[in-house]
Amino acid sequence: MAPPPSYTISPLAVLPGHTERAWHIAWNPTRPLLASCSADKTVRMYAYTPACKFTHVSTIATGHTKAVRALAWALSGRTLATASFDSNIGVWEQEPNGEADGEGTEGGEWECASQLEGHETECKSVAYSSTGTLLASCSRDKTVWIWEVHPDADFECMGVLMDHSQDVKCVVWHPTEEILASASYDDTIKLYIDDPSDDWFCFATLTGHTSTVWSLAFSPDGRYLASGSDDRTVRVWKRVSAQELRWECVLVLDGHERSVYSVSWSVGVAEEGNKSLGWLASTGGDGAIRVWAFSEPEGEEMAGSSIAPPEHRLIASIGSAHGVYDVNAVAWCPRDGHTDLLASAGDDGATRVWRVGVA
Image (tube, rainbow, N blue to C red; front, side, top):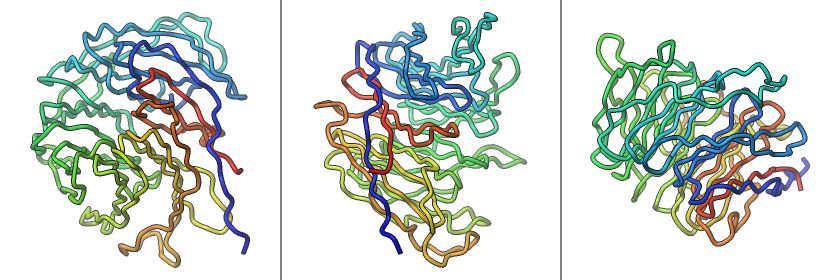
């Protein structure tokens, strides 16, 4: 059997422009656009060609009065949500101008279609569900809000979840089911589901991290959840019982020398002879980006309830990805043909784009 290939993380583009730290990035799921947000209160949009040439095409002066901490695209790619330290959420739509090209990278100005108020203090994260019908947000006020998306940029609050005892850092939706996960300064991860006869409720609390949990990412097939923490580890949790919605920690990944601020899980590039579970990228305060490849445990059936950890190996890493600066976020491109592209955002104010490929 041939040895597995080795990979490298190669720089493709450096996208400067923010005047303060870049907090987060988000790839549009349907159009060749990459968005970044910053403590400078703006969102910058970059278009890219099939050959991965990036061009700045728009800056949204959001009107937020404090840093824009996080971004999330709706599944349609036509709506962008911004979470701000001013406690509000902005919902942005692009005005049509009749000049959009076939890829849809041009168009009119981005306009604020709605502003969602309710959080008492800094909003830290925002996420659309896979159907695009729900939006989740979380805050330093220890709450998670779930909003139902209605036509004409109208939103209805469906629930305020107060299960965390501290600042909530991140929310993320399951890729195929309406299961929501949140991560907190209280060192825990909470999982929520809707009770059709009642309200949204927390059905599981995942413990094991010994410090703040900063970031979460579901595997593409939805059977695993990765978490990055101030304790410098990445934990991988497995859904061991679909019926009982039970999750267990099956793997702890070490290697980062400081806090892990961000994790992102993509379909990756499958290697011959294994059942790929995709690629997981992690980054944080040590400035390093690490990429792991995951595959099914040997001999395990897809529907099995085994708590065997997935096969895994570190396939690529790079240090000082943003020079001497912390890296605040990593995100894989979800678009077909570009799933080997990884973006990062750092305290240097720049967005950087990388390609993970065979050495």
